[in-house]
Amino acid sequence: MVDEISSLLNPFKTKLQTLADQQLIRVLRAAETGTAPHQRVHSGQHQDPHTSQDLLMFCSNDYLGLAAHPDIAAALIEGVDLYGAGSGSSHLISGHSVAHQALEAALAAWVQPQIPQAQALYFCTGYMANLAVISALADEHTAIFSEALNHASLIDGIRLARAKGAQMHRYPHLDLATLAEQLAQSPAAVKLIVTDAVFSMDGELAPLADLLALAEQHQAWLVVDDAHGFGVLGPNGQGTLAHFGCRSQRLILVGTLGKAAGVAGAFVAAHPTLIQFLIQTARPYIFTTAAPPAVAHALLTSLALMQDERGQARREQLRRLQTQWQTGMRALLARRPDLGWTLIDSPTPIQPLVVGDNATALALAAGLEKRGIRVPAIRPPTVPAGTARLRVTLCGSHTEADVAQLLAALEAEANGQANSPT
Ligand SMILES: *Cc1c(COP(=O)(O)O)cnc(C)c1O
Image (cartoon, rainbow, N blue to C red; front, side, top):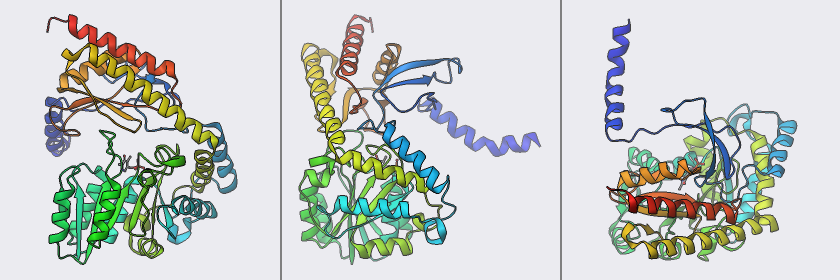
């Protein structure tokens, strides 16, 4: 019955309408070409769906520009030739392959300097890796100490942990004094400090060395999600732990392989006992089909490339672009203090420009897009109210000309704002 279906749909329609009223409806846009600084993208759903546009993209997390790298694509094809398309089942049934095994060995070698004797476990996505680590390690004897700006996947892992009886203490962003107090007061047998290494909306770093010192002082584990630092920060792209010179067996590292590594998936690296514990008990590991072995095979090429001179060259290019962007933006902001924009001082490829209110951020993003440049406008609740921003992400595959084009477009938009009657 049509009427029955429409009454079933009503609660969802009402919630969608609320989102629409708050200007929070998000639009999916399909790209016709691979991930690259210049991409052909369909227009939004309110425009003609059949039109598409060539855009200069400053939004992907493909920080080293490896997602379209021919050697990695060739390795993926080779992996399909060797192993076929799918894994067929979960790791513990029959989905585990020598390609997964080789990848885990390479990742374990990668993290040895930071986590001596660590083993690594490959997951289909970073979201699942975070769900797995937190929900598996925690029970009613566990207290979790969670940084306020943690990624949604960590937060969801903590929700599962709380369903198992774990205690949760949220500490304010970067507030180690509060964290220390919470740790000191907790009687829990198992303590997990959980943090992003790079805060994804600011590009700021968590003070990992200080967090590790607190973990040592209070007999806690430190779980670090290095989604944005792996392959990018630290000597040779080792990651944010290496950037801070952290080294400890109490570290539990989650790294993702769909961002700088350019492919897909994630890993957890930790003491072999913890890895064994995850294999035996982590439901997001056990009850899901293993990623295609070909993907693991491609990642082996990706890891090699990230660590050799080609990865190094892309990291150096990234640093040059960061300097070019920051120098150019600071000059613009110095000429135009009336704009009230703030450039966050970020040491990562995430380079947000805070513009304040939602309407300004949306108008700027729309203005840039008319000029052929795509930068996402990030609004509350993703960021605190009044700090809406353009989240510029730079990639090692951008050129100096690309960044110059972005700076010129922002300057033109700024001049447009000065001239506008509102
Ligand atoms: C992207 C991201 C994840 C999730 O990783 P996926 O592999 O994309 O599922 C987890 N944590 C942080 C901080 C991220 O930015």
